[in-house]
Length: 121
Image (cartoon, rainbow, N blue to C red; front, side, top):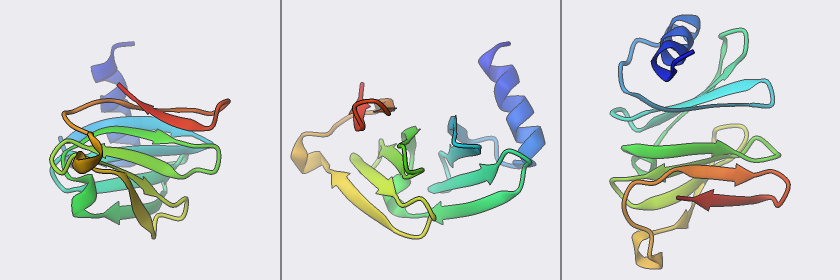
C-alpha cells in the first residue's frame, strides 16, 4: 500500500476534512496526526472517535510526530523551530528544545521506546 493510500484511508475513517495532514503515527491503540495549517495535533481512538485535540502556535507547521511509552506526544515545528511534548491527556505541553538550543530546519521525530528517548533527523 502506498503512503497516499494510507492517508486517504485514515482521512476517511477519521472523517478528516483537512487536506493538510502532515504527520501520522499509531501507538497504544490511538491514532495521532498533525494538521500543518491549523497548528493542531489530534488524537483518535482506533474506532474513529476523537479522544482529544490540542492547538498551539508551538506546533504550527509541524514536521514530525512521535509517541512515547506513556502516550505523551512529541511534535517538531518547522516554523517556530522547537520540539514540544504534549501530555497524554492533550491538555498540557512543554517546549523541550528551541532554536536557541541549536534546533533548526524541518526534521522527523522518532521516539525510541526501548531507550526511552526522542530522536530527530
